[in-house]
Length: 144
Image (cartoon, rainbow, N blue to C red; front, side):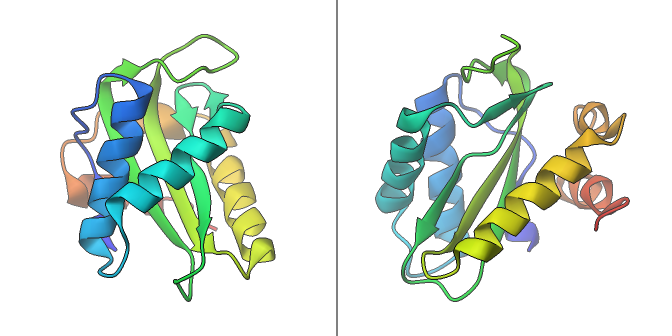
């Protein structure tokens, strides 16, 4: 869904990133509350940062009122401190929301993101993206 692609996040810190992603997702998926999503992402982050290193974070949560999983992707040109173990700022945020009744789907999506991101050059390519169409093309390259 192109509506879930955010190639120019304005957020300057981790709470703002979660707020901006939650608002964008709620705007694209009627019936979801931006505040509920933000709170769910923040609760998960409180357990430990979802920053994986190399400029990637995967904030995620489970939601009872959805029938399928969704992936939203946001990019920050400036980068945001997100508590990554490597100390590097995060430039790419892959936000996952999935049905609370489908934990297997949630884990499979997280694993697919990890596999995609391990391919050399993919995360770096995201840094030069200029818009939604280009972001979609970059993400689709070699998608599982």
